Amino acid sequence: MLNIMEVHETNQMIEQEKLDVRTITMGISLLDCATDDVDETCDNIYRKITTYAKDLVSTGEDIERDYGIPIVNKRITVTPISLVGASCCKTSEDFVKIAHALDRAAKQVGVNLIGGYSALVSKAMTPAEELLIRSLPQALSETEVVCSSVNVGSTKTGIDMNAVELLGHIIKDIAHATADNDSYGCVKFVAFCNVPDDNPFMAGGFHGVTEGDAVINVGVSGPGVVSRALDAAKGRDFEFLCETIKRTAFKITRVGQLVAQEASRRLGVPFGIIDLSLAPTPAVGDSVGEVLEKIGLEQVGAPGTTAALAMLNDQVKKGGIMASSYVGGLSGAFIPVSEDKNMIDAAASGCLTIEKLEAMTCVCSVGLDMIAIPGDTTAATISGLIADEAAIGMVNQKTTAVRVIPVEGKGVGEMANFGGLMGYAPIIPVNQTSCEAFVTRGGRIPAPIHSFKN
Image (tube, rainbow, N blue to C red; front, top):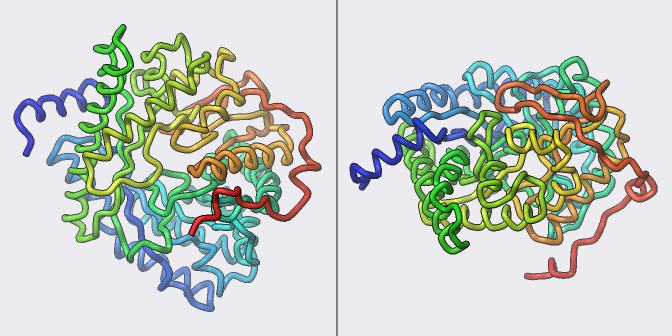
């Protein structure tokens, strides 16, 4: 039971410290939509999504009004489409038809994004999975709200380097297909290692095959709340600092738990997980970078940044996990460059480099996220970035990801604008020394020795 002091405190977090619930995401299984005919499959997909999610947006708006808690996005995730379309899709164009069906259904129910145009290929690609991957440039350029992910590795299986090499070319093709909009299509695609089945955040969200028919997952935010709380920790030791972050993460997660339970009850759909990640926005005062700077860095990217981020991530998890029945997704702290004002500034000044970002991915929620790179970056270099991140995830038994945007026609120092929550970013340099002979060897990098557990 909340007391009056906690109610006042929550109101202050919402009104003054930019606390919000970043997303209510409904996961929907589409396995029962699969047929041998692509048009029939598309009809089944459209019908199921528009039936199950017809009240998702209105319910989110009702909860916002009833509790005064901002809910920024309402989203849908679905079963990886490479599985749903395996029987009926004989060409990449067939998969594109499904992408259009997803786009129409999402727009019909009014959600912001729909995720799950995805493939899981950590060991090898089936013909259907390769067709879906090759369809991505067309699918992501012709749809508005469809998001895609490909899982190329895991601690248990190793890294599928054939998929990694292919994705370098695919990302270049997506960038070219959406060149008139700062290669925005790449914003809707992410390559993963150790992808979770219940992530409510985009572009990597999908409804895992181990999930039920439908589920409600909620992603919270709150870097502004943590930042304000740290004002009281200035000059204090790490014990006080960590306690402050843990207590704040607990309060943030309780708000997410309340919203998740209400959405579940009102929609008649089981509650899945809370993803308690600190998710920034480009707005001033809503920045993970600002939190790191208040911990003691002159600017994000300075020596000590990785240690500060590791501590922040750990304390967020320790505080948040006690506040929810089920914690899942990615959970920790996101470092998407284009979506974080202080990280944008640090990248523009040259303090935050892609090499430092890679080091930070060893301890953050995800990986190289929303990073604008020169449009002339080679496909092999992009594949090398994906391979490096997948290796970090595979060896450290954590989720890692790459969402880079090679902005066609632009170079280092120019600005790419993606709009809304996706923000804007300076294009930063990438080491262009060739790794082509490495990424084109073919085959699979074996799983590490510590994967052999049963």
